[in-house]
Image 1 (cartoon, one colour):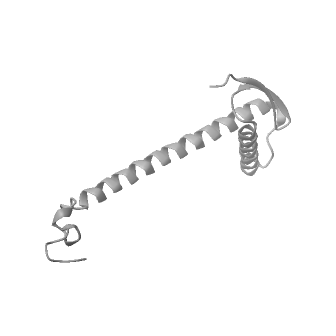
Image 2 (cartoon, helix red, strand yellow; image 1 turned 180 degrees about the vertical axis):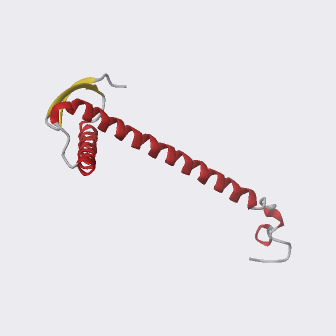
Image 3 (spheres, helix red, strand yellow; image 1 turned 45 degrees about the horizontal axis):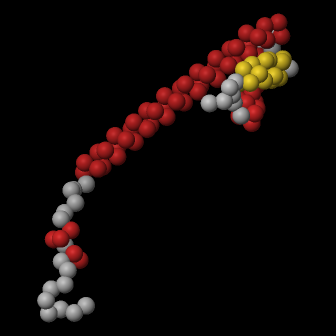
Length: 119
């Protein structure tokens, strides 16, 4: 495992310094998702209250955006886990319905040559 490195990241015009082992491309994608989540929250606020949120509490908004994103991620993981369990259960039921393999020596393809017949 690689040691964390200090990374400077600009999120919505604010500079953040953090320790990270993430690939720079992954970090950029995560930052983009966080910024999109923040903008979605701003639009929802504006639709609800008729005015955009004030810029006084941007740190709280960033944390709320990150928490919202983490909640979405956790919910997706739960859904994925449930779907995996459902799939495993379905496959298990299908395997239970399949008859056991018959002895291949009993089948005509596996009887081998009998005396007096040429192939």
